[in-house]
Amino acid sequence: MGSRQGEALIEAYKITKNKNYLKAVEKYVKFYDLLLSIGPVYEIKDYIKRYPYLSYGLETIISTLSKLYEITQKDIYAIKAYLFGSFLLEIIS
Image 1 (cartoon, rainbow, N blue to C red):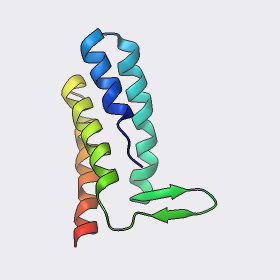
Image 2: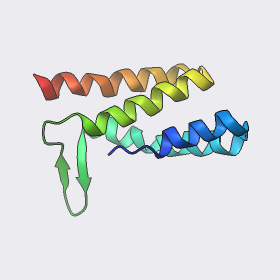
Image 3: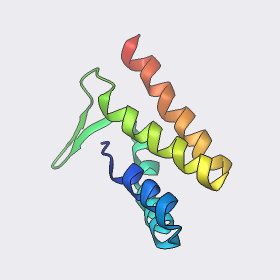
Image 4: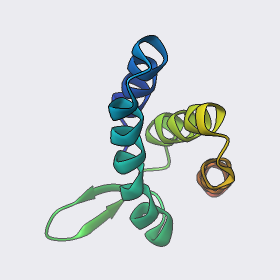
């Protein structure tokens, strides 16, 4: 579910100010909407496999969305980071 690709694109944007990096990460995080609608998912193939009660994949998503909010100041990214963070409550409960 999570990887550091989004964060890498944000860092590339910070260094170069090339808006193509920012556009790429905004496009990249649109996939997260699907994940929000079905909950924490580990794998999607012939079936959907939910996360085994671990938080490591969520951290990269939350971090990417938080950093994207810091750069763009678009509230939607902060809201999505919060919603993904709420999955952690389910995982650790």
